[in-house]
Image (cartoon, rainbow, N blue to C red; front, side, top):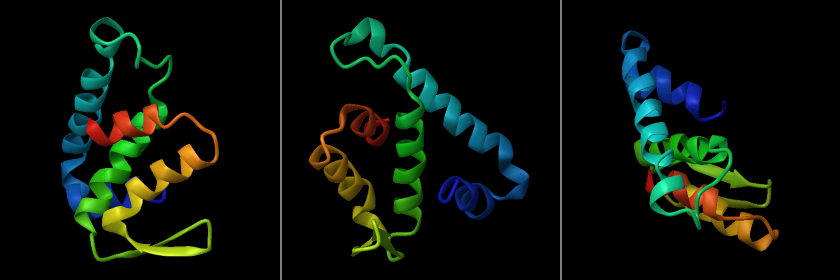
Length: 104
């Protein structure tokens, strides 16, 4: 919500909500065939990947914005998706859904 709402309002604009839906549909259509193409990296739920897809686009639209990671480290938004991916891996989570969202 923190990144998707400004993305819709600023980048896509109030009158271009259909473009945002097309963006999300593109992500769904990109991620869904992974069950058949690469079953080893396929996920049962692609919600995290779609969130990271929005986060990645937001970070490219606002590269100079400063964001805080867990309240301790401040980084430019340009590196934010990669920092969150590293944080997921460091905390023992599965970084594959995050990486798939960045790739999509």
